[in-house]
Length: 163
Image (tube, rainbow, N blue to C red; front, side, top):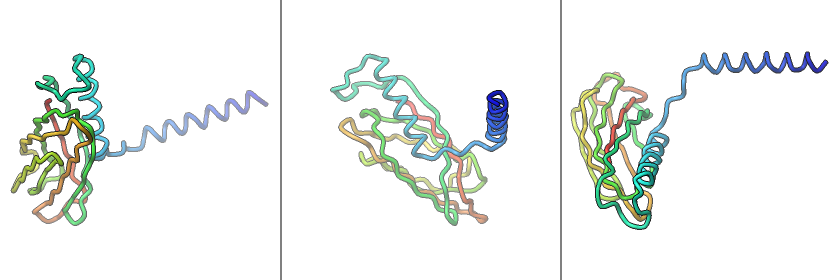
């Protein structure tokens, strides 16, 4: 009886694993991407033996690339994320990988960074310098719209930042 129950449990577990492997991976949102970026900054900061009580005096000499999707309704997408990036200035390059379109918009932070962009084709780099707060979370905001019909329902973005 117990062997039969174990066999059924193992079979069910195998079926669930096969179904999970067959399902496409869920796309990561901007919140998760920036959370990964902030965690990397903190880990590299600690590994460098830098002070936790004073703002950084120089860059870490490190970088990270994250991918995320931006949901877009009728070709317009908007998102804001709060993350703690320890006061480092992020020098970034962003690219919309998919879908094919021309994009315009704005990237800003609560620390006063504002980057407007216009007529960027997917794949074209957008350079960003984003200040962050040492004293608390920084709000990162993105507003973007596609200019060409058909309007996408989501955009895939690649963001590489050095700090």
